[in-house]
Structure formats: C-alpha cells, structure tokens
Length: 364
Ligand code: FAD
Ligand code: UDP
Image (cartoon, rainbow, N blue to C red; front, side):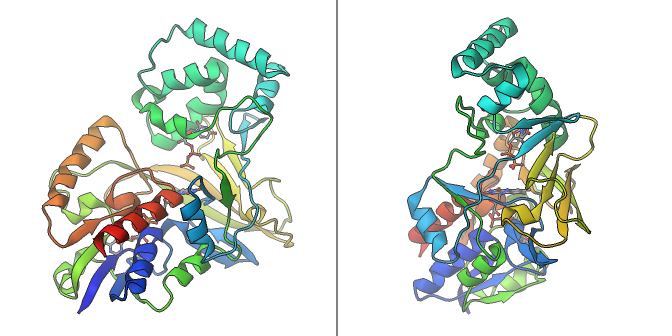
C-alpha cells in the first residue's frame, strides 16, 4: 500500500512525487507511455537532444520555481527568438521594432506607435470581441494578416474570429529591438535534456511505464490511499458530459545529412497554404555543432478521443464544460486532479511546477 498513486510521469507528476518522497511518504508513479517526462520528454539522436513533442523552452518570472528546477538541472543560456516565414519573407518574433522595421520601414518607436495607432483607428474596433479583433488592436491589420491569421487558423483549426483573445496575449509586444520571445526574467534549457532533469526528480521513486490507469482503474486504485491524476479530466469521468475539445499535433521528425538546415531553432510558417505551422531544428537549442541535424515538422491536427490531447481549447464553451467536470472532481474523495490535462489549462512548464508545489504543500 502506497500513500500516493501518481498517474502520469510528466513534470507535474514528477514534481509532486519528489515532494511526496521528501515528506517521508511513499508513492508509485504510473505512466501510459514508454517513457517519463510527459510532453517535455527529450531523447538523444545524432548527439542532439530532440524535443520529441515539440520545442520546450523553460521560462519564468517566478524565482522560487527557477531555483527549484535548477536543483535538478543546469540550464543553458538559450533565449527563444523564433522567426516567421511568410511566403519567403522573414520577420522577427515576437512583435518588436525589428518586425515593424521589416514590415513598414519605420526605424523609431514613435513611428511604429503612430503606424499602429493609425491601423487601429482604421479598423474601427473599440472593444475587441475575439482573437482577430484583439490582434488587430495590438499589432494592426498588416501584421495580423501576415503573421497571425494563417498560423492561428492552422494551429487551432478555426478562424481567429472564433477564438478567445487570451491566446494572442501570450506573445509580448514591445517597442525595442529585442527578439526575445518571452517576457520572462529567467530562461533556458536543461543541459543534457529535460528527461535527465525529470529522472533526477524521480530519483528513488518507483515508476511503472506502459501502464494505463484508466484500463486497470480498480486494481491500481487499490494500491494507494490517495490518487494524483494528471491525465485528461474528461477521460477520467468516461466523458460523461461529453468530451472536452483539444488540439492535437503530428511531428514529422527527420535526421538530415546537413550541418545547419535553417539557421534557427524555431521557424514559423505563418501563411495558410503551408500545411505545417513550424519547423524545429533541435541542435540550435543547445548551440550544437554536430555534423548532422535533426528537424521536426509540426503539423496541427484535429483531436478525436484516442489521439494525444496537446492543447486544451479554453474557449467559453469548453471552460463551461470543464467547470462541470471540476465539480465532479471535487466530489471524488481521495483523487486530486492536476497538471495541464487534469486542470484543462494552457499551462507552461513553470506554471505546472508552481501548481504541483502548491498542491504538495496543501495535500502533504
Ligand atoms: P504532460 O506532460 O501532458 O504529462 C502527463 C502525463 O500523464 C503524460 O506523460 C501522459 O502520457 C500521462 N497520462 C495521461 N493519461 C494517463 C493514464 N490514463 N494513465 C497513465 N498515464 C497517463 N511549456 C513551456 O513552458 N515552454 C514551452 O516552450 C512549451 N512548449 C510546448 C510545446 C508543445 C508542442 C506543447 C504541447 C506544450 C508545450 N509546453 C511548453 C507546455 C508543457 O508541455 C506543459 O506545461 C507540461 O509538460 C505539462 O506537464 P504535465 O505533467 O501537466 O502534463
Ligand atoms: N501565433 C501566431 N503567429 C506566430 C506565433 C504564434 O499567430 O508566428 C499565435 C498563435 O495563435 C499561437 C499563439 O500565438 O497559438 C501563442 O503562441 P505560442 O508560441 O505561445 O504557442 P505554443 O508554443 O503554445 O504553441
């Protein structure tokens, strides 16, 4: 009999498990996949750490979280500076003076702000009602058309007029020549990969891979007094109110006999015609100098039950449905739901670490 059964060996499960052990209690971690790490999992190929489930850059403003993860890994100095390729035109991201200069030829913040104010006024939008209107108010119609409209429609499988504005607020807008994608004080990638960091978190903890909680629920539940569940909350309740919506992805990972394929870790393809959203060249996350390279081409995919639910779709309809599942969760004694899927939130890794530490403090 364990004190805790932790479902999912992603970052949330690993942090929680570490805290359980530290508190002198026992736990068993089970994981459906054949590896630990969840979506942050990395593996080595051609001497390169490959981010199997897409680019993962750790960034945070939370000093406590940064100190915590640094106990389990040494972080490199990688700063994410993706570029956007719109029909062969290259733009810097996030939206900053380099982007405005390339788009309009302006050179000073004042000129850029004037241009934006003019475009906002021409749009006639007072209070933005959706992602399209929010984007136009923030960056003007031209940037919206070239860098946001196509990418977002591909990524989310619906037009920007049908998406909540918070998604675009994730990206900084600044009037300096600064291509740092994140407005975070701390940023980097664990040297040697995320898997090594998560292995350290799970040091001395029993982990069973290839073990799906939902297909052996009775037997596994009997092994522990409490359950921490980090899988999809709707799946736990057998979709009794209907499935929540997610977006899925397909990664086409290729090893190429070339040293430097695209000159940057992340290149976004922001037109609507290119079927993929971005290409990642993994060696650039760690300033690699290997003779070969590994890229992954990221195709957005509609989600149906059985596919990997990479992104929760936090629009009004789904948030309302989630609230019903959450109410059920609160009435389920001995089970706590956490992580990106358990709490149906578009969490970044630092938020997951923070949430797991808070839950551990409360529950342990
Ligand atoms: P997960 O990593 O999803 O782990 C949950 C685990 O539970 C999985 O391993 C799953 O297999 C397992 N599981 C589910 N159901 C069951 C079951 N029934 N039985 C057993 N096991 C089960 N964050 C950043 O901070 N920076 C980034 O740059 C970044 N980039 C991202 C890019 C992509 C493409 C994606 C999809 C996410 C990105 N994120 C990024 C978010 C980051 O991946 C998450 O915040 C974090 O990994 C979530 O950790 P988690 O433990 O909550 O969930
Ligand atoms: N986005 C965009 N163009 C880009 C990059 C991002 O329109 O070149 C929008 C898109 O809607 C995306 C959102 O901004 O879903 C958030 O981007 P982020 O890079 O945070 O997405 P993630 O890394 O989580 O996929």
